[in-house]
Image (cartoon, rainbow, N blue to C red; front, side, top):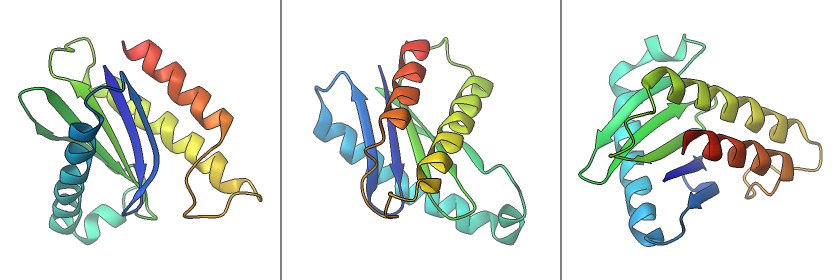
Length: 136
């Protein structure tokens, strides 16, 4: 399985397949926010100068691998994959984050989207669905 989350400090978009274990997934995502903040503050100003803010593997658990990405505007993307999924390599995860970031930028450019509202874009959801199918 694979799960995608877009957050500021609260979820803007959550997509999970399969839907069982949703509560454990939410706990994992919120725990990952602490790791993201730790990595951002640890790198300091050097991180703000970079264009790509891929954080890599945030932490592995027995069941999941949690990856993170932060934009220049501090929007956080989290991807959670099953630990048994060995087909996804680091460069593929990085590519998924780039696609997610580009699609998120398209959502933000929509004049009818209010920043901070949950993302309900069909185009964004379609791109996430495509990435989920490719990853599985």
